[in-house]
Image 1 (cartoon, rainbow, N blue to C red):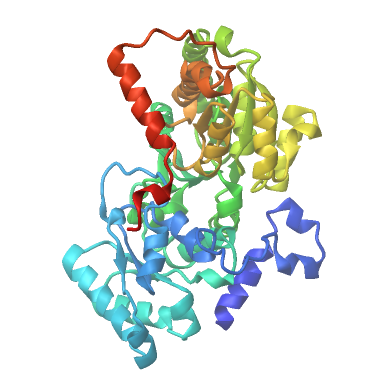
Image 2 (cartoon, helix red, strand yellow):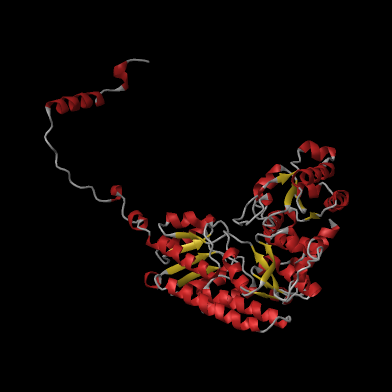
Length: 496
């Protein structure tokens, strides 16, 4: 536990973060994450954050050392996609019971599980995740992993991020620490070149990175490792030979980007693949970073030619949607890189942003939002469900872009909603992704169902005067029987 405490303090003291540099030494050690609420840690603990970052490494076996409930809570919790191996979608857990805990069988059971996975699946590596129970009872995960690696002759990586140590964001960074200490740099690639880059913090949600990689391939730029989206263990192990790196989500892996820069001289910049302008800027920055690292300057010209070609195609496709969407009002309830990149992307086609959340955004993210929106009134740290509903029910926005947690608020307010978070079904990155995003917004807003659900219900309208039609003899007789029965009392039927 002492080594874990030291690692957490090191993660909190992040010199690459401008907000952290502005604090005094005492405040810096506390970090930025808010403490967890007792009883509400599910879905937001450090273990969950570590699993989010590492689970998309597709050919690795992810073994959770703890009770079955922890594995069920975190397995497949992101819409990441794989172009090959499916081992990452297989759930592995030691499934500790109360008897195992009392009898001290945790470490023995973990070692046995590693051996069984190795014999049955033969993965290139196993990642082992301790949980609250196994950390509290003192199972030495790192010692077991080291012994198993020596015994079976392949990497067994301890990811020391039990849930109780902090928030999901802390777990993201502890996962980055595990990659830096145990994986990156352990394999020496024999095909390193001057056009190799790393992409950090890209999760390939709904296959988004597959819309960007063909652009890099056309420029002759090879992605040495995309961490973690659709990644392979050996690619990450050789990621230290890349010449430059782009960081997509700084809140998750800024510590990994900084340490790779310090240790292997891999400069990085933060960018976004959301929106036409941001995608073009990201491609330019990648090319410029490679030229600074010794690549042929001719790549700059090829990059500009590619950008001009792709932008022309994208703007031509978007022209059909501009008359239908220009002036429409969008409310974003998301965070991180999407809080500013999606805002910029939508404003490019004339959509008005009435508000965006900055709950999970860094100080840099917030500054970008202020520069884009030019109005602090459109920025909110956190909007309660009641306030969100009031804003939508008063028709201050034409559509809500958010995650699945707030979709029912929009539906209750009879307002179109589109999923923009990790559960989404459509990729929105790159030039084609921007066209798809606009298409989905148009489909949601123009859906005829909204005109129907906003109409008053029949029972809310004034009752219409209905003309009584003459009854037949049989109908009149039936009515008399009903009226006579209705006039009786319970006593008329005697006791039961």
